[in-house]
Amino acid sequence: MAKEQVMTPETLEGLLIDRSLGQLSPEVERLLEAYLVHDVEARRMGMGIEETIGLAKRTMPPTVASAPKGAWEQVERRRRGRVVSRSARWIAAMSGMAACLLGGFWLGHAQPGEGMGTARSGATGEGGQVRVLAASPVPAGAPAVAEFWSRGRIQALAMQQGEVRREPAGRLPVRSFFESPGESR
Amino acid sequence: MQIEALYHDHGAGLLRYLERVFGMWAAPEDLLQETFVEALGCAERCLAADSPRAFLFGIARNVGLSARRRRRTRRMEPLGNVEPEAAVATDSMEMAEMRAAIGRLEEPVRETLELRLRDELSYEEIALVLGIPMGTVRSRLHTAVKTLRARMRD
Image 1 (spheres, one colour):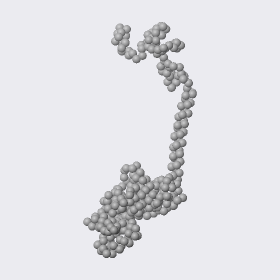
Image 2: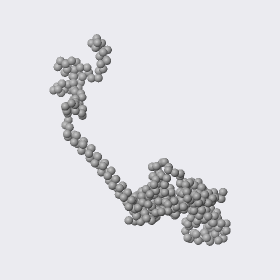
Image 3: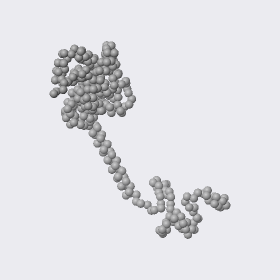
Image 4: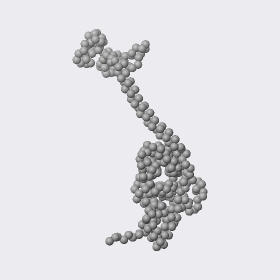
């Protein structure tokens, strides 16, 4: 047994709105028209809705009536420009990376390793001489032994060669002042 | 090219839409060109769409929203409250009331109504453009019409 469909006011209003907006299928519209023939109140409601929508349409005039100013060529040019700029960015990134690698490779080959114990600045001093910033306290030619950099060995080597006893690195002059005030003064 | 044909067929409508909705944040012609540059990037999908027009409107909307995100500062009042001066000058009392009533609609409802009445998109096309179900489009339009009727009766 088929269930009887009842037209509720909500359903009717929805159908009338859809009809006024031109979104009702022809079949449903035909059925709705047939229904409206017998329902004066619904017809009046339909007219009211159409009036409202018609007024709303009139208050929404197009803001631009003319065709777009931009020609199609501009769109294509813009697209080409975007493709080119994307390629250019990629090429630039790759070139930069290659330049870095080549630079590093060249530096590695052109600057052979220096002797240990000597640190040099990158800048040259007067007359093109390389300026030495720090030198090892161990005399040149000293035999390589264990504990090469130990404080005791450095002092021993200095004493052997009759040099003045050097203060160990990191010892503050003020400490010497308090330890042997007579000498300092 | 077929996208070029779409440009000639729908360019004016899209420009109208872009000017109305995003004109306060960016030049509509610029947005239109951007829309078609994007469309060229996905030409196959655009041409295979059930409604290439709705597809283009969807791209235009995304392009416009991106422009709006980039430029937070507004050049003028939000849309819906602003109409061309000539139109406002010739308004009858009834039309002025309707204009005010439309301006007071919630943003999603007004946007949906304008896509139907101004841009003449179908329910299916509006659903595609806004990325919402068709039932939601219908519901929003029903809400809009009922609200406008009620406000005009008051």
